Image (cartoon, rainbow, N blue to C red):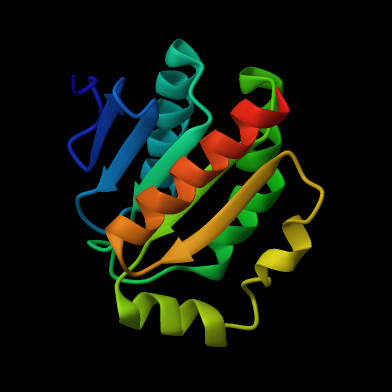
Length: 143
């Protein structure tokens, strides 16, 4: 059932998968990004959901300042509210992924090693969902 999200972000909890799916509907201003991610976290907390698919393909580009906000402000809020490691699969268009990989202001994912949130980047939705399912299965075995 879709949640009450702002018009620029579709948020859906999938009880069959126990995933949150957030789809950005357009490029956003920083205040919209902050509000949207706050809504995603609220929805995830309501369902105690630690597996997220975040579709950013409709956003024009990934900005280094937005990534810095995510790293410094947003991600540190996730574990205290959800309790354990949260897994975020970012679904990107190929040109977005290429831009992220060549932008020196966006850190490599290895900086997240050991943190209570793990990210992966994908250009294929099926691969992103498969990664999340593998994370959930691994968590179920180690719980």
